[in-house]
Length: 127
Image (cartoon, rainbow, N blue to C red; front, side, top):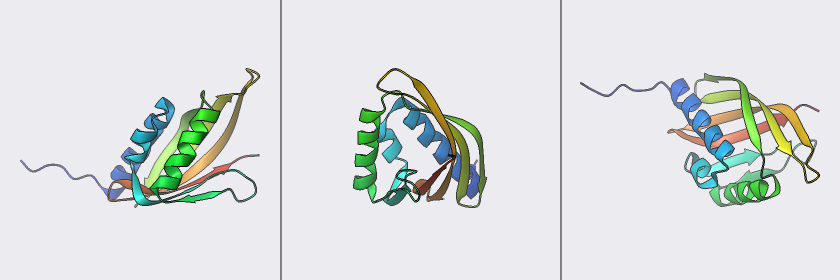
């Protein structure tokens, strides 16, 4: 029996789901295993366009710093779907600030997956 091949849509959605699971564990190594060497991450901050991080080393450093500064970071997926090599994820990001106050924001990420690895993550936020 030959193995079942995933469609590009299934491959993209699975990669993004696994990435989000690693994010919620604050597992930067696990996240980066799911990103290509030439990955690009476009952050929501600073407005209006967000900072762009290109290459695995720059993206890794961003996430390491992010989790040090936001140790309670959690993303809840509100909706996810794929189209070809693209995946769209609508989310709610929750945190606790230095004063112990909980906060949240909602947004959307647009992903591109190539060969089972995330090569592009563009993040957009409401507000």
